Amino acid sequence: MSEPTATPPDTGTPTAPQPPSPTSSPGRAVTLLLALVLGLLILVIGAMLLYVTAVHPRLATPLTVAVAGIALVVTVAGIIVASHRQ
Image 1 (spheres, one colour):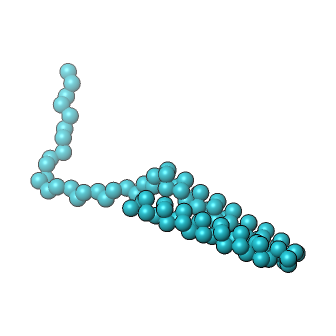
Image 2 (cartoon, rainbow, N blue to C red):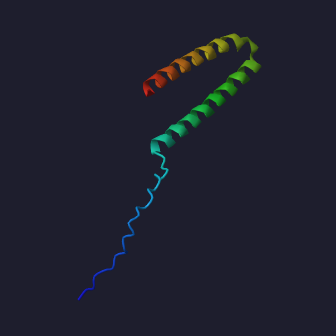
Image 3 (tube, rainbow, N blue to C red):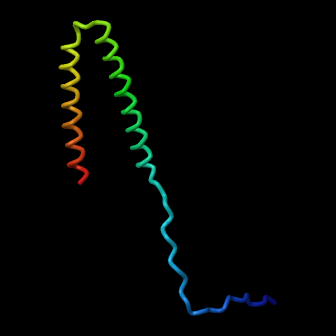
């Protein structure tokens, strides 16, 4: 016949609660990766515009206006995203 399994005696003291294990969600990793890629893309485009301006000085004013417009659009988009996150 089967023997009953022995259970450890109850000491009466509760065990300390375990801290939650640090887990990162996949969404956060994707967001960080997209932010890194976007940052690298901005750096490459900036370097390209700097090169074009150095080689063709006549294009400095149109490129400055274009970059200012893009900066304005990025700023407004950032404000919209920040306001929707709250």
